[in-house]
Length: 443
Picture 1: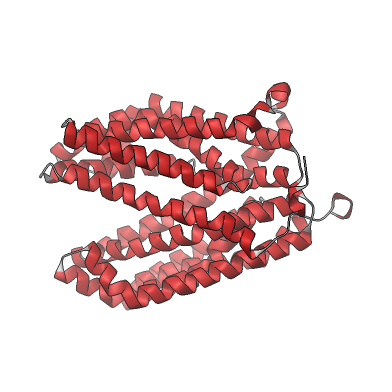
Picture 2: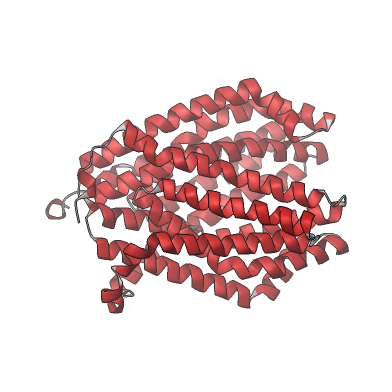
């Protein structure tokens, strides 16, 4: 196999990886809007709440295994950069086995999982009953959804992000068509929304496996080595560190919302609206972070520290440029976006007060997001975990002080502290990314 690390690192190559991801990510919130809009045609509040609550519960459960996407991307990129087709396929096969196995485990444990979820997020009897119906159908898609994390990571690592876009368009497009048919055409209600998503999830996995069939076929003659102890240990080390880091990050955002609840209903609603600005930022800048994962990982696999440096610099330039554009858009068009997201005059007014934080957020956070991509590519997941632990400690300290002094402004300031500390702590570890690519004899 040719040394993929030898291909020129150019702005065009970065954009070829990043832009399909940006477009792909744009389809994700649209699906949520369609789900809500379709079920909203029933004219009742309970079905809307049930679909929203059920989707949040499943997303929270599934994202525990979000490390599969990131871990697979870094490991595959390095094998791809080294020209090792067999190990590239093996990394994907191992991740698929973990993802599908985890999904089957969730199906078996669905009753205690849902019981715990409804204790943490209680709802009215009607909403909970409908949400349970929704979850009872959707949970059967767990192996497909988590398995797709692995396939997406592989596609990003080998720079096939147009295929990622195709997967999203096919899966989300099918979901939308089935939503309309099952709910508005056949009158299946909440169960129809769940069934549409379930079918789309398995269709997505089927398409993903078809795309991956050539590389998976390379593994068959070496199947007995698939779970060799040394490779399993490396897989576990990479993924456990990412999982801990991701749990800490999710806990930080959860604590933000819990503390926002103490600021009153209007402020809580305003913060929820403004968090959508952060979601837009993440979706828009993910493409450049994913480009860093692929290009840095390939450079590490090819043993080229100079290419790690260039890949990091090129992707960071686009990331910072994208963050500057987003910040300007939020500053100028933010009030219009707020009005689009809520009709409440009180919530609109409150959201405008805190909008400057969201205009600054992309520039404050971009370094941390780009370092995430670089570290994933270099599989510096231990350093990612350590940096996150240090950053969360600073965030907790900020939460203890700033909201009491500045109110909700202090809450947003604490969240900025989290992202700023993530950037600073990972910057300190960055030289290890270039060292990871040092030729073996010089390591």
